Image (tube, rainbow, N blue to C red; front, side, top):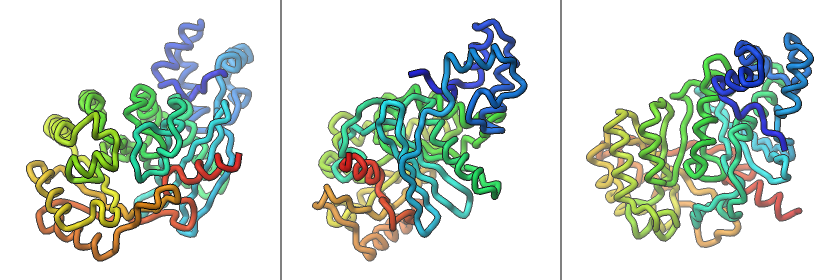
Length: 351
């Protein structure tokens, strides 16, 4: 299959046109049609000559995704199931916040991280998504908003969908540069968050990228014993090594790290766990931000249940009293397939 043109950064597109005997300003024209006018075909690019359009059509497609299912929640959350050109399925989510519209994108078909509580890991990784397929998720959502006719735009992106972003590092970095480009979607770097389970070498590589993009760690446990039990990746990268890499990131960039912590009943949600978490973060607490997430139960993981509200509040209180910035995440889409990977898993069972 031909690649999506969304997979090229603007400098890469300029180089491609030069390589094919055209002036580099053609890239500026195409970029504007793609990201400002948001056309669906090369034929709509009316200021390009026919041979240029033919050359683009010969080498690229624009949109590699086919809309399969849309679920709409009463709170405004919209979950999309997209079919790829090889008939694989991925999920993308649009969430409405007071500060804007956020899109959560998927980076892999399936996931090999093996987190025992997660719906995404129910299906092993089939392949990485290309940069164009990741960008196209944002574009599909933006086109959906355009069709509503109310001038809404995607303002924030979280790279927290199916898959481990740092296991698809190069394509994710290209995606970030495309959506951040100020002549395109112009989504500010500080409005973009990338989450990782803790692939230490990639955290250290990301530290050197010079991006202002936010970093989050899927932590979910305050010690190696619990984390190894619920997150297979902890066998490869122990918590001490993960935290060392993150603290070095903070020291070098002076940027805050968000720690995602799913609250699972009688697994990681007791007061002693909160105190361990305080101890883990205390030396860098000014740049630590903990996001406490009520667990969305998954049918296949019957051993895990959502924490009691009293336990979540007690956990939160211990963190706050010890100077750890934290929040209890507002839930989105609880009346649809809320957990990441649930919609895809349900659809695949029907095939």
